[in-house]
Every structure is written in C-alpha cells, then in structure tokens.
Length: 271
Image (cartoon, rainbow, N blue to C red; front, side, top):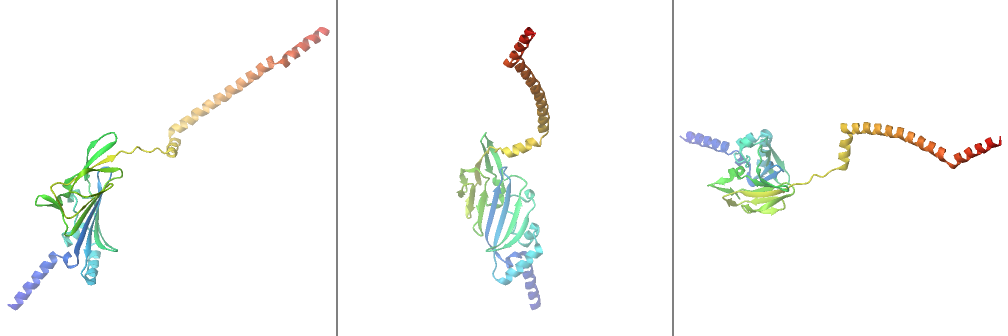
C-alpha cells in the first residue's frame, strides 16, 4: 500500500512539473511590449519577459534549457505557455525569433512583425493623413469583456509612431504621451483601445547633385550633346563666313582703300 502511494505521488509530481516547466526555473517580473509603427501602419514588435531566478543553480539550468530550445517560438510556447506573442493573431505573424539576453537584467525577447498593418488610414488631405490604431490586435488582453493591461506581471506597452506624427486626444486608456510616443503602464482597464494620430506629409527634398548625375546618365543627355555639337558646327561655319564678309566690307570701304584708288587715278593722268 505504501509503495502504491509513493508511486502515485511521484507520478503526480512528474505530471505537475512537466506542465509547469518554466515555473521551476524563474518567475516573470515584468513584461514590456514595444510597437514601432512605420508610415504605412505596419509594425515591428519587440516583447521582453524579464526573468527572476531564485538562485544561481536555477539560472544555470535555464541557460542549458535555452541552448536546447534555441530561437523557436513554438518550442518556447511548449516550454512555458506564458511565453508567446501578445499582439495580433498567429495567422498574422511573420517570422519570430526568441533570444535570451543577459546584461543588467535577464530577459527573453521575442522580435516579430505582422503581415497586416496595426494602424489603418482613416482620412487624407493634401497635407495630412489620419491613422487609427486597430484594437483587434489587442484581443489577447480581453478579460471579461474589457481590455486589461495587467500589473502582475507588470506590463508596459509602448507605441512608437513615425517621425512627424502628431497624437490626437483623447487616448484610451489614458497613457503617457511624449512627442510621437505613447506608453501604457499596467494596471489599465478600458472598454476600448483608441489611439488616433495624423502624419504630416513631407515635401520631398531635391538634391541638385543627384539630379545632375541622373541627367548625365540618361539617354537624353547624349541626344542633347549631339544636337549641341551640330549647332556648334553650324555656328562655327557661319561665324567664319560672317567674319570674311565683314573683313571684305571693311577693306572695300576703308579710307586707305579710297586713297589708294585716288593715287592710281592721278598717276594715270600724269602718264
């Protein structure tokens, strides 16, 4: 009877630890999500899971596990169900890579992008384009019908907008706005995720050097060179003819020419 109870206890322990593999190595103290949006509304996303280890032995065990798992997101999700992407759906996910970073902090980082824009264009004028962040990409934060940015672990979502973007108020939930950046710190609870911004269209600057270089390399430049050469040849020929006519006119109508004619007439009279 005692052996059966012991075997049952061992079996339960194996099942328990196999289902919570990550928990025996670390706890997640903070979770940061950085969303960097480009001018078309697409985003590059970096998620960091900051880890705390109870002792050096557990850290060494985790390092060995990290070498075993590698960069595969699917393998990390199997190892710990909390390690996954929190923005968008798996069907929208481009290639994602996981890395373990050790510096002042120790964290797992997932870098990925989505194949659809997280911010959609709402309106456009000659000078401005208005965008709105789509709340469907935050569905994994829905709890009980509302969006919740948790504080256990403490979660921070930072949205970095393109240069020259201007955030339009109100922002829901309320966050920290600094220039073209918005930050949400947990705990936040809201019925709607709302972030609208306008992007100022930039007038393309013209580089004289680049324009000249492009012109020189174009076929039109060779055509213009040929036309210019023909005109120069014609101008040179006409110039020679005109110069000769001017020279002849001057000789024929100069005072010297007139005096020489008179001298010859007087000489003929004497003879």
